Length: 396
Image (cartoon, rainbow, N blue to C red):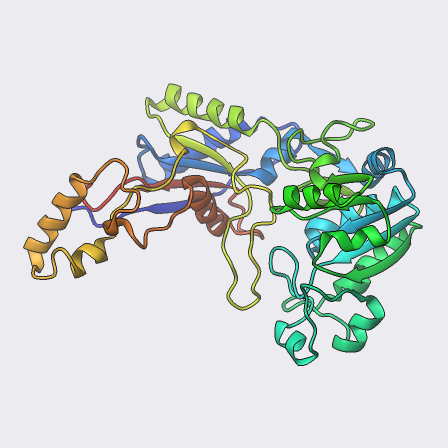
């Protein structure tokens, strides 16, 4: 019988993961039990994905605001510091800001506008036009900003992040000043010690500030990149990718994810004889059309994966073939012609016209986004995702 199902993504319900749990055993057992209960077979090149949140939790990769403050004070001097380009997020940045403020006497918080890096808006861009404000050149203080636009409210949550962040700083005993600018060099008019909090543009921002004469320039990846007073840490990303755990604790991005992924792949091979691919995933990379939020608040979609997930898709656009090369065919003849073309496609299509319109992204970014949408971020209870048929095509 002809196959009628292509790619299938399943969220697997797992036990609640706690610090110190053997996550490799839990992930493998969860998959094997799900396959037995729900009647699917494990096949070569299936994909098992585990969310970074439970990997970090099992590793116990946590830090307190006091430990973060200690690192901030040591590396940035403990006096006035500029904190620039943070994203507007209670989950992602609020607890980090507490620790940063606790390690300084004054925080000059510089917010990008009309939105942060991942699309959380402080003000509607149309209002900038109405008020004749140029976000590329105009620098505003808090009073000017609120006189022009009123109190800022997040599209979905209704949060006034400007005053929320200011209050967080002051509650930690530091003086707070808020300014609005999209030029990193603006902060040097206030302080020469700068912590840049952008995620995907951080290296450029650091380079601009150093060239402009800053004394100290650090990113979030430079904080807690080693243990401080027994804290967790991430050697590559520091507190980038961290999430709020409690009101005074953050869970950091996990370490050693490639080794972890390979260990699961090995265990599955030993227990089933099948070689599957394994990855750890965080935020997906997609944009909300209403809130305009670009989801990727982690430094990468996948911090670790097995070798079979390297590269990008190599796919032919079926609708291109149907509308162009085989426009005169239909029915079985069309099906056979397209199937034959897929079987004979080059191993690297590159800029071939037949590949135009296929998504030009890395496999890990595409698959990680699928996993993030499958597992969700709330109460589904499926931190493990199993994908079958992802590498199949119309002929398989």
